[in-house]
Structure formats: structure tokens, C-alpha cells
Image 1 (cartoon, rainbow, N blue to C red):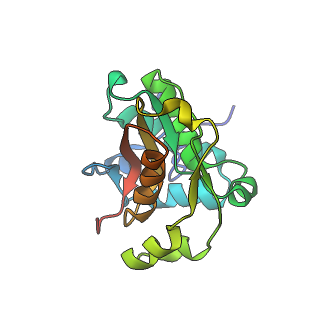
Image 2 (cartoon, helix red, strand yellow):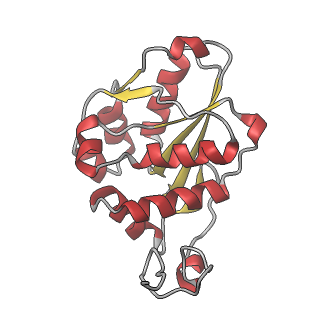
Length: 197
């Protein structure tokens, strides 16, 4: 049997020691909402591995980490959803990281997870842009509500989950589409918050 290794740095771990070595765990810095952790230390590398290297074990470790640290009580939301990647990106990766995060958080909260948004287009510039204005332009009109969302009209409190909060443009656009489709309230949480925010 192979020894257990830290999900971030591959240091061998003791049995039952969790996913992180002590050094990497100490680098996880709590952040103000809507991010649960600051985007620093070993976290960026792990997120990059999950998103761009199709590393399912990294994605699962991130989902467990978010579920452990989520600061929402069970009664605070009716449904969990996520900021979707464009279908072509999700297919290339083999999974959609925000969807995986939302699924594990929903299980932790004991509420349903529903796909309520569709990404209508893909823009490669979005991943590399940190300009507030440019990101707002790139995400404008990017999302639309999924069919069936009208059943939530005026009564649902939705937890919107994403992986990284950079400028807030994507989360603002996605939240606006949900509210425009009749969702009563949107609560946003992300796994990581970039330090500039």
C-alpha cells in the first residue's frame, strides 16, 4: 500500500492525518467573506492543479476543505448552486471545480444542489485578467438561468459557490441573473479570495 501524501506538497502523512501536512495546513489563511481562505501559500498551486491539470484528487481535497470551513448554517439556504464553467472547458477538464465544491458543500449542509446557471460563452481572457473593468465587460451577459428555475420564484435562498473571488465581476453577474430569474436571496461563498480584494 502506498503511503498517504499531502495533497499540496506530497510529503508523506501519518495514517488518519488528513489531506494536508502541518506546513501546508499552516499556510491556509482565513479570509473575510465571501472567501473562506486567502489565495496564498499552497492553495493557488492546488487550485491550478485541479482546474488545469485535471487532478481529481486535488479537486476533492479542495471540496472537502470548503465543506469543513463553510460558515453557513443549515437553515440559512434552501439550495446550493455554482458559477458554471463553459461546457467546453468542463469537458476538457473532466469536471467543473465549482460544481464539485457546491456538491460537497450541499451534502455538508443537507440541502439540495442544483445547476441554476449556464455559461453561454467562453472567453480565454477571463482567466488572465485582473482588471475590474475588463472582467466586468468579459462576464456581462455570460450567464443565463437554467430552465425550471421559475419553480424557485420568490421563495429560495440560494448559496452561490465559486472557487476564486478575484474582482467580484463574475459573482456579481451570476447573482444578478439568479435574482432576475426570481430567486429571493443570493448568498455568495468562494473557496479563496485574492489578497487584493
